[in-house]
Image 1: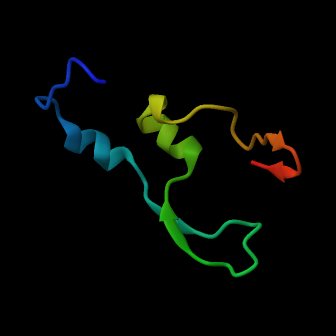
Image 2 (image 1 turned 90 degrees about the vertical axis):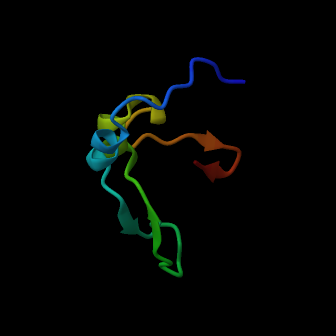
Amino acid sequence: MKENVTYDWNATTRLKQLKPARFNWIEDETNTLIDGFLAHEAAEAVPESVTGVKDGTEVIGNITN
């Protein structure tokens, strides 16, 4: 499903711009820590990785996503 795949670019530079973080979700009553990225920070390094508005929410039925 992909085309124009190339491996001859400086991926290390882009990876070093990402800031992995450890956090828990506010709604998680167990406060389980997970590893991931903050979307607004990841978007600075890889804009195509994130859509939407910072701190935006979407209500789907009785679930806020």
